[in-house]
Length: 468
Image 1 (tube, one colour):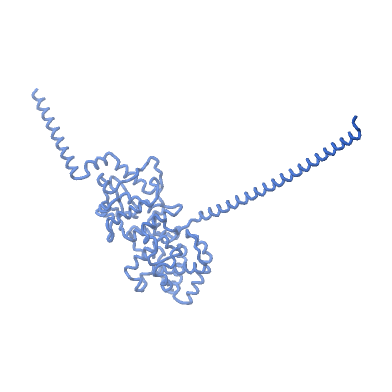
Image 2 (image 1 turned 180 degrees about the vertical axis):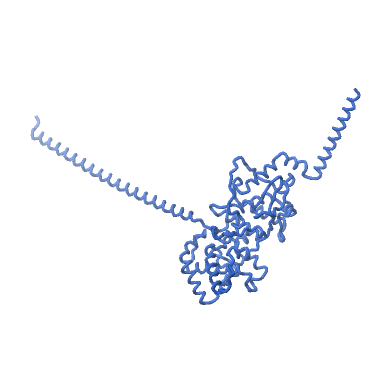
């Protein structure tokens, strides 16, 4: 028989055990809640950290996008183009701007050819005005024109801008300068090339500001004269003796144009003010060669004549088997202009590709010195110092290192029509049977023999018919 007290005691132990179990369960629940709460806290911290990192990335991307929205205008020449000629990319005598600062024989002479600062008093006034009122406010804007970060103290950078801009203006007034060294015949071509190099540019608004100050100074000095000063563009083109100057269209309203620097001014003077409408010819599938060289096109019946009435040397036209190309002189200045204008077009995010397209078209036409000889004989290419091999190598190297869309370029119509004629039955017939005098004589002899044979056959048949 069970002891009731024992039973009660056992029941009490069971109750105690149940109470202990309930306490342990509640502790476990509390610990689980703590763990869940800790996990939730950690999760929230991770989520907050993720949000912070995401916001940081967005800010960086937006900052980079804002930088891209303000496109650069002064670049380094791409290595593919710089490898063609270092001389055409880097300054020879005159270094302008931060990229090649201190290079050249004129680095110490800039301070002695400043028409603006001809007295010590004016020097302090002008330097202080330009430095603290213009460059201090526009230093960031000026540095943002360069594609590379300019790590220069403000004082050094502003002084460099002032002296370089003033010295360029002195070169533009070279005709009235009596300095014997600047009047040396060999010097001006080198200085012209240096002013056309992409890496050797100043922002145009800097030049324009210094030029406006110089005009005010000259008006104050020569108050009795009412002569209107020349524009900055006119002064530059008068100094710049290009081999195809007759095709330069000096923008009369250049103040209304967005001009980045002197090279961009030259670029815009050759290109149309209103870009031609680009059409993507969907049915046009250019071949690997696109258009053939001069030698093959001539053998297909295409004539080459100089277009002396063209408004720009970029105006190439093709009609009725006649390819009209404006005459051009090839020399070191032309080479410098081509390389740097192409580099400018290739580096810009958006913009015209006229120089790139023109050089690409000419590189297709010129494969060998023989092609150059034909174009020289036709009056399209002239060169007083370079031989045919040099010109052929120049266009071949330029053609291999440029990228353009043949279906949307401004010469797309000419590309398409020249290739279409070359591949036509008539072009193939002329190329096959009239390539050389001996081929023509053979075809003519065969044709005459065929006519005689046909005539003899007809006469024989007619005589046979008459007998009956």
